[in-house]
Amino acid sequence: MAETDPARPDGATGVLVLADGKTIWGRGFGAEGAAVGEVCFNTAITGYQEVMTDPSYAGQIVTFTFPHIGNVGANMEDVEAINPHALGCIVREDVTDPSNFRSTQRFDAWLRGQGRIGLSGIDTRALTRAIRIHGAPNAVIAHAADGVFDLDALRAQAQAWPGLEGMDLARDVSSTQSYRWDDGLWTLGQGYATHAANPDGPHVVAIDYGLKRNILRNLVAAGARVTVVPATATYDEVMAHRPDGVFLSNGPGDPAATGIYAVPVIQELLAVGKPIFGICLGHQLLGLAVGATTSKMHQGHRGANHPVKRTSDGKVEITSMNHGFAVDANSLPANAEATHVSLFDGSLAGLRLTDKPAFSVQYHPEASPGPQDSHYLFEQFVAQLKSAA
Image 1: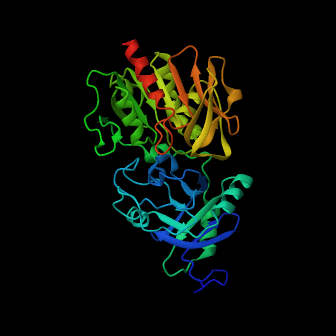
Image 2 (image 1 turned 30 degrees about the vertical axis):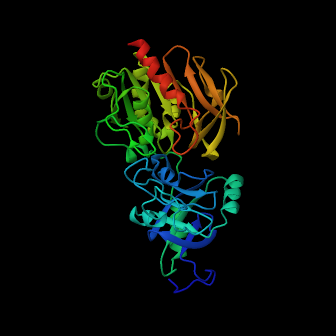
Image 3 (image 1 turned 120 degrees about the vertical axis):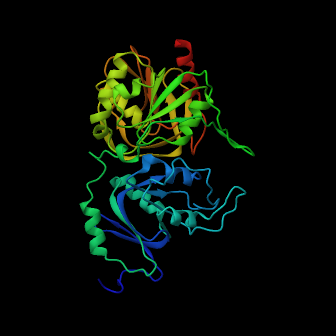
């Protein structure tokens, strides 16, 4: 390995090496090291901690299109899982000192403590345009304080990574045991509501394919008691908790791969008429369970400003999205109907079954980060369970 690379700009301590051989230099921050995954982009202007800790980003390197990522710092409240799941992040401007009363730490220091790599000084607009034109590439993100990299080895690593198609990641990010959840939503000056679950509320069993904490908080805020079970839980293990309804969570990877073990469980739950609500990966798995197909999207949907039209009344919800796979609308069976449609590209954003108490949406109604237009879905689900009690 050469001491220096003639193509490396002065001061470059980070690099993104794409599988096609392209090398993009920048300034590394956060942890040192290298990680391989798929490069995607997110258009949200805030909520970067929630994005980095969202289990749905497992296997991915996030390019933030908003240039000033890190300007509100980091804290221990704005996380969606115990550990970050995104492999790293790419930003335009260097991380600055935070300017926010809730900040307890600089974003770059938080990344370093979490073992995640950051890369600044990148033309994120050009990278985003490349993803939109050519699709999400496989790549290695690397950071070394001395700026010395074995580019051939990094390129080989990027080329050898198989990609997200056919990859089951839900099993990797899911909880390994069942547990109860009873905390509610966050409010200014009070933090998160603790022990907020209604002891007499309907019991929801949430299957954890990579769920976010604010999903559970919204279920509690809507009046439910919540028990979380692992992604690999069997039908008998789910039913042992005597659920009034079942929630299918978000998560990473290819739904067809996760569906190998998840779909049979969902089909059994449907067969006994158990009410079901799914989001994101859970939406895709519900689609697979009733005979629809899924496919990988060209660039995916990731951001906090995605307009979705409700087919029932024509109203538009501004939603938070994070998905690279979608249910093929034309593959829906006769007993499934589209309830929501993306106004960006017309892709299916929600479905319901006409003969079973089951529905799902492709977006993230818990809105962390993002608008709260869709919180009503949690209330709708819990109200459905109460009325059936």
